[in-house]
Length: 324
Image 1 (cartoon, rainbow, N blue to C red):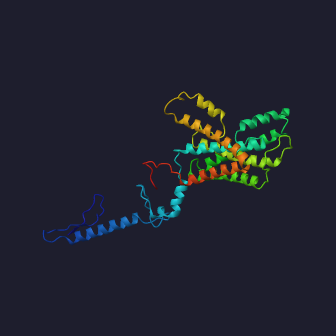
Image 2: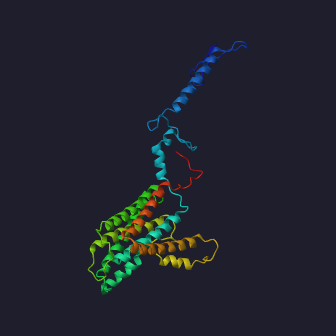
Image 3: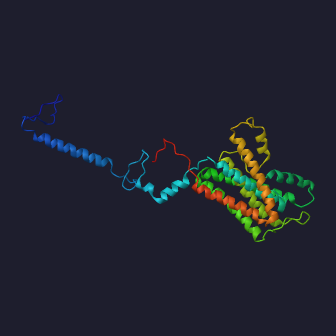
């Protein structure tokens, strides 16, 4: 039976269906209503997960539980994540100690052959300061070579540090690019000497300056700037790789110098010995083999470091990191 009671405002209310039930005969209207509600809920669920225009693979679901989608397991995405990951800084002090050895090799050859430093800019600064007074008398224009080496070194620092900031400082790909550039600079120097574009004999101090020497000196100074920037990026200031004065001072003034456990002391001592042995090696190689041998050795070490970054362990993932 249908009732249409008048509302207080005089309007007719919608029809209300009164259904009489019997214990043995469920209402047909109830069955139809249940079916309709189920269909409506099903359509709502389908509408809720309808793929949008920015969905990937027809799905807009976002993983916040750390589960990866099939697209994340492709070779390309895996390689991309590998090279975009930050490296783990554990044991990177060993890399910088090797760089200190390379610094000794480079400066040992550079000073012995061309009378100028490539890594240690303290000596070049002194030579530059003596220039206005015409000292030393031989070789002539030593101050000019020192000025160029110092200028290239400072320029290299600016370029490398801005490159690290722009590409993300400790990202694997950034470290590979940085040490790859240093390796190429050493390779170019070795080739110039090997092909005798640069005289393979030590310079005669009383002979006129050979301006072609500026080229290898500049290349070696440029790669040295990359080394010291790497020590700052890796937060290992106690291993500057190209300077000894402050290293020894910090070593001796350390209040925990004699402590049983002192990693910084150990790194400074190892860095000093590495640089010293590098310079000794350069001297020994220059007497027994060609001048280029020191540079080839330095290049090989830098190349090994560059390749090492490819397989270096990535920085540990935090527990609350989620793949989105």
